[in-house]
Length: 256
Image (cartoon, rainbow, N blue to C red; front, top):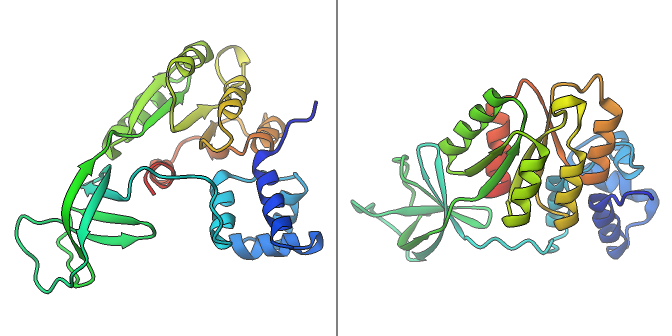
């Protein structure tokens, strides 16, 4: 049975809803995502994968809800640490910065309170109240202990609550007991097993939970990994992992 490409289906349905003819859909996608026409055509023809972030970008372009509701309206930042929160602000114009008072700037749909920055502008809003929320929960599957330690350290640095697993059995059992907002999954595990069973389970439970796929074997498993990207809408990162890239992806998915 052919597997459903959930991300592509969402985009095709949206294009049809907006009356965009099939022959014009590739050029429209290329314009929205700022990619080449050929790349967009390959995505629509299921020759290249579509990430969930790309789906969000297309829906945002048309100002259509993706049924993704954040339960926070603010992000409190201290050094690298990020904390999701709900804030109430005073909309009055601020002429002078007061001591021991938080001020927020708007970034997209969120109030950003950066306690480590001395920057001040009259456009900033005085924060009257902050309610801090629990850290987002992330699951990491990798049979490399050193990689698990590295990724866990990155998560601690940025305020993400990470649970680490070394094999499929452990993470599948954990998924039966609790839910995670994002997953980092290594493609090749012990005994030449891949992690498709785990990815399939994630997608069965949710078609929009971000999945970051790690691999150091792209040359040997290019076709299998390519099919996983197309079928499950995962985001690929090649090893050795670049910490700034993966932390940026995590922040974008879990906070912004």
